[in-house]
Structure formats: C-alpha cells, structure tokens
Length: 434
Image 1 (tube, rainbow, N blue to C red):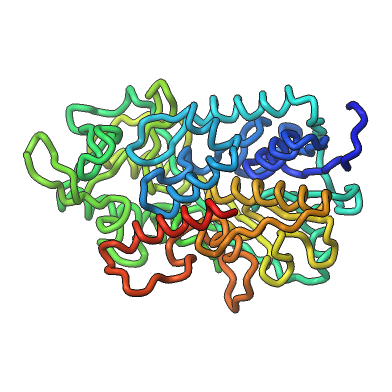
Image 2 (spheres, one colour; image 1 turned 60 degrees about the vertical axis):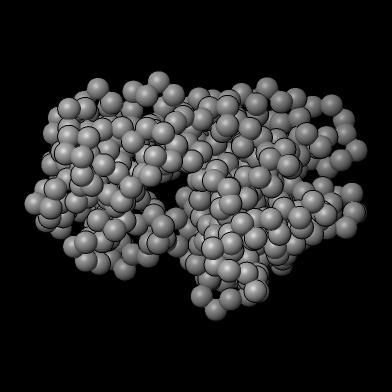
C-alpha cells in the first residue's frame, strides 16, 4: 500500500455492514484492512467466503414509496451506497421487494473489495480486540466468533449481551414446481406476476398445519428458552400461536385469485425468485426449524410442490447483539474506547439493508472524527436518523429492530390516510438539509 497521511482503518467482518463501510472509507482515501475468517472458518449460516453473502433470504426489503424501507433506500442512494448499487444491478423479479441473485450480488461486492487498491483483505479469525490497531470497526454480525465475542464482553466489562434466533427458509428447484396447480401473480397485481402461488383449500390448509405441529424439530437444550425476532419467526412458532396464524401471515390469500376456480383460495404459499435465471425459488415467510427429512415431507404436502426438489433446506441459528443504547455512543463507538466502532446486526439492527446502513453511518462518523469535523447529524425525522436513534437512545427493553414508521417522531393533525406520505415527504425535506 502507498503511503497516506490518513490512519489505516481496521474492519472486522466482510458482511453487508463491513463491506459498505470498507468501500465507503476507501472511496474517501483511507486505507482499509478488512479481516474476514471465511472461507477458512464458516459460521452455522454461511456457505462461502464471498463478501456480503446473503444467508437467510435474498430480499433487501421493500422499495415501495411511501414506506419506511423505501425511504431508507432513497436516503442511502443519495449517499452513494455501494451495496444498494450492486443490489439494483442484480435485482430479480419480486414485486416491490428488492430481491437479488445472491451469488452474482456477492460476487460483485467481492470483486469491488478485492480489486480495490485501498483495501487489504486479511483472512483469519480475530480473537481479541487488543489485536486491532485503532481506529477499528467490529462488523462481525450476529454470528461473531466465540473468542472475539468473549473479548467484546471483557471490553465492556459486562455480560449484558443479548441474543435471538434467526431461521432460514428453504429454496426449491423451479423445474420441480407443478405449474398445472400453481399460478403466477402478485397480491393485488402489484409488481406483475413475479411470485409463484400454491393455492390451498380449507382441508389442505389444516392438514398442513397439523403436519407442521406434529413434525420433528431441531430443539437442542440451549434453544429451550429461545427468543425470536418477531419479523423472522419460524412457521412452527407461528402455528403455536393459533391454527389460523399462517392464513393471516405468510399464507394470506388476500388479493390473489386461483385461475382454475376464479376464486380466492383459503390460503396460499408464495414462492419468490431466488436467482436471475429463475431456476430457483424460495418459500416466502417459511423460515423453519424442522429437521431436514421433515421439511421435505411436510412442504411436499403443499399443492404444486408434491415433487419439489430442495436446493437448500431451512435452518435455525443463534444471533448475538450488544446492548447498544447502554454500551455505545451516538456515533456507534464504544463508550470505553472512542476509536472502537460497531456496525451491522451486532448493534441490534435487524435486516440486511439496515445492517448496510450502519456500515455507511460508521464510515461517515470515522471520517468526521479523523478530520476533526463536526459529527454528521441525521435528524430523527429521517430514516437513517430514526434507525440510529433506535439503537442508541436509552430504553428499558432493547430488542432488535428493522426500519418502520414507529421509530419516527409522530405527526400531528394529519389524517391516517395521508400519514405515510406525509412522513415520507417530511423525511426527504429534512434529509436535504444534511
């Protein structure tokens, strides 16, 4: 690496947050040392050594305007997000969802990083925070290596670390889907016919629910008091909350019409395109902790999936995050070390794109700190400001969160039918003043 007057930034973790942070800092003229333990050491969820590998889903959330996830992407596009740029280039049809061909997406991010003269990739495990010169960023995600996790605990001097469990949905070979039964459509025709739909009548639905209840699950002892993130629940957990929970959740048939009958089915399973070639589809909302043989047996009960070939089966893994409102400053640095920053899901944000956003924020905060410029202020009315506030403002029961309108300051004297648009417009106005 050539000489530079700026300090070298050390980033641990090559996921979405670490990749965005590294690319942003490199673009600002910093040299970055990016540490990644994969492919030498894999996590329970990862399968490759690629940067920004997507594991649970291939969706980065909604692009819809006005929506909170859509607003977040609007703001990140103005800041020049590399992750967002690549996602849009490798987008696959999924209605208003920004879903990507996960292999081509991570391949592009990996190439951007490995070919960048300002980024040096160091393969191997970082076991101790003391190994890292400062400034440093910990973006190791919720599956942080246990030795580094222990070092983080020692750094903060507390066991105040939290966790929840994430589940992954299966992926099916498109050629094995019976299109004599299934049909292509999006709910309310929004986004065209981007989803494959498997319709169920009442008897088929309740037989499926019964099979889910009776199926064998992966339940090690450490999972007995499992905490789940509410927007990524395994279907078994949803079923335990009532027999109609799936029908009002991922199997909601509203806005769909079975062309064979001309009627709305009792329930419907939706499949979303997994890659740009449309050769693979994932079961939307069907995160599961069923044992592998049980997944194949139970999911083949779904009409149209009787001969489904599974390219990837679902799984369950534990995610760790720190109590950020107590442990971190407003600029996501440690209260015990202002040159040690945290980004990604380990901070308590939930969702691919939300993690990406914290990587962007940390790159801005580090640059301001190094150059001794004022800290960038993201107003609470903006999506980035609302997300940052959610993980840094004191609260009694800190839980992971994705972006949603409940994080924003409320509006007054605005009719509920105009609320979302008003929140969206207000955020755009405030963002322009940054």
